[in-house]
View 1 (cartoon, helix red, strand yellow):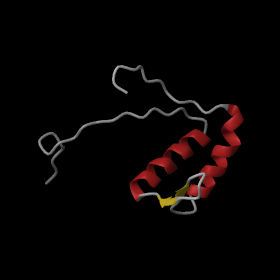
View 2: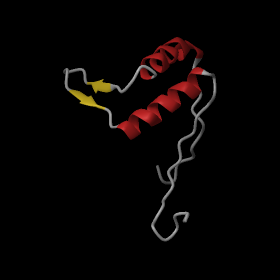
View 3: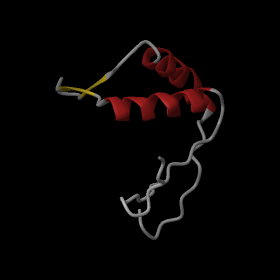
View 4: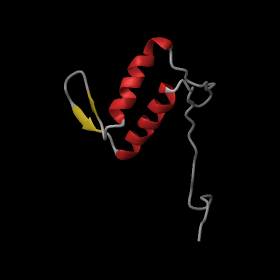
Length: 80
């Protein structure tokens, strides 16, 4: 996405009920994706957690904006 302006993603009112249903489903436990051909893959726990948090925020009417950050061993916060 380099060079493109990023904007918050706002949920259209027409999709609000679907996102509320998705949030409820995700709050019941881990999920999987199923393709149109029936291929299934369980979501890794990190991806599941991100999706769950995004669905919760959007179901509450909040806009979301995803941004990548780079961390390295040299720049990561240190705790002792």
